[in-house]
Image (cartoon, rainbow, N blue to C red):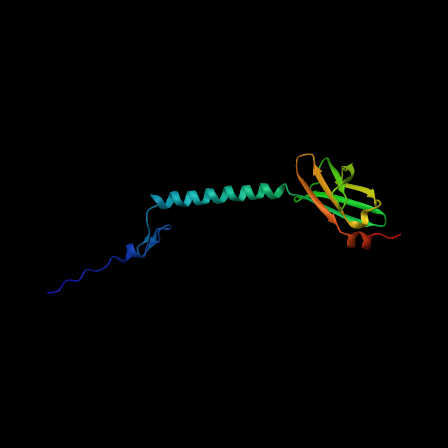
Length: 146
């Protein structure tokens, strides 16, 4: 007489994390619960850290209209910096001008001689955030009208 052993399919089909198999979910104690809690905690921490990093990103933008360069600064949340400075550098990276940001996050200055080669406009907010914008010779020529 031949004896055959029936395989225990409920063990073979059980999911290692969720604990569900052919016989339904296993008890809520043991490593599956701690893995689940760890995963949820890790996901929450990563979401918080990413949100905090993005909420403080400063963006600078500059444009030329006629003989005036206008600089705008905003955080990614839409909030404007309370205070800060705008530094204007020429194509050789020499500082040409430093002016404060206005309360609305903007600054303006007249287009100066030698700007045709391009300008780098750097904005530094008082809370340590900074960004820059490059005005290329093409940008300046397109916005500049004599």
